[in-house]
Image 1 (spheres, rainbow, N blue to C red):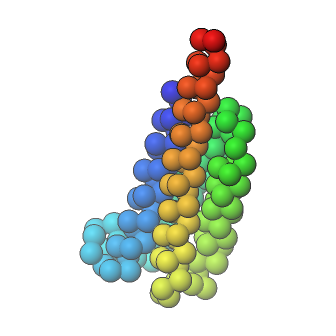
Image 2: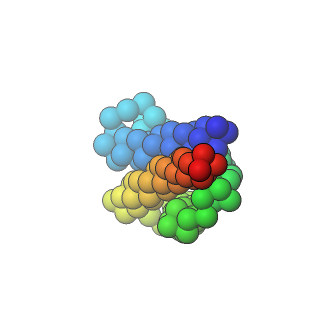
Length: 134
């Protein structure tokens, strides 16, 4: 059950990141208005990264130990690597469409990874329960 909670938290955090990026671009939501305060924007990104990466690594790692699906592990690792690279190159992309576009695509990849992680673990539990019944 703990694995599912970690995946759910990671999905929520990735979604918040995507909403923030789109909102910053459109200037529609209060969280997007943080971009008006440059240092607050930078701190927000670093805090989100500092939370998302360990939570995602823990959830994906625990899930992989259970289901052993590289099709879940590898996209997650690539997405987290991309998220870290985006943070490194944020100043170079700030104000362009690339930053919110890439962040949104990476966020979608992370959400898909966590959904795949949940499904993989559930499949293992169902198959394990069925193998015990026979």
